[in-house]
Image (tube, rainbow, N blue to C red):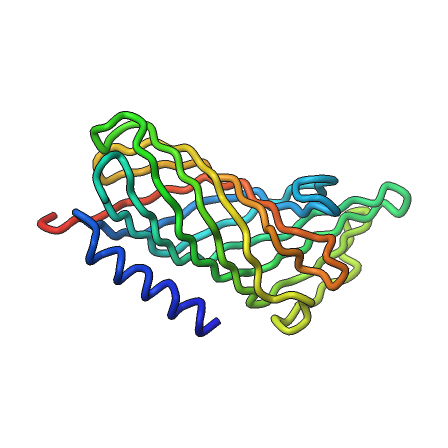
Amino acid sequence: MRWMLTGLFLVTCATGLRAQESAWGPRVGVDLAAQSFGDIGANLTDWKFGYLAGLAGDHDFGNRFHLLTEFLYIKKGTRTRDAATRTTGYTTLNYLEADVLGKFDLTGNNEGLFMTLGPTFSYFMGGRVRNVMDGQETTDYKVNGSDLNRRFEVGGAVGIGFDLKSWVLEFRGQTGFTAIDQAGQVRNVVLGAHFTRYFRKGE
């Protein structure tokens, strides 16, 4: 965890020094989370709702290229259903996530459509597991950070969004490249709608 924060801080400092302009602001959003089993993106579970919140930086390097540095609290997890026992399971996994994404301006004037692409680095903080049968809760327990076999997750994200001056809406999909279970089969998958308000120098 410490080295993830240190790495993001160093990247942010270096980026800020070399960028033509940097802007910072709060980022919030909602997400749909699931898990894949086996190959990346394969055999997806049912989706469950979550949310995300944090701080985002947009660093303009010119020539339609920006670098985004983000530090987020994000809820991942899954929903499973067993028709035979009429049971639905809800697994919520809470992560701190550092993202470093390239942002490609598709219009050339720092407004309008853009695409994002880059790596994500996540650290599992803890979570919760609930099972409900016929509308009645049967189990409900917390998951500690150390309970997950692989607490640190490396993934990737791709998104498309719309930039209107300092207001940004982005739709983003991401998956873990590293598995979270000991057997190396389970990966987190998230689809999110992100909203950011950037503040630039002089505003």
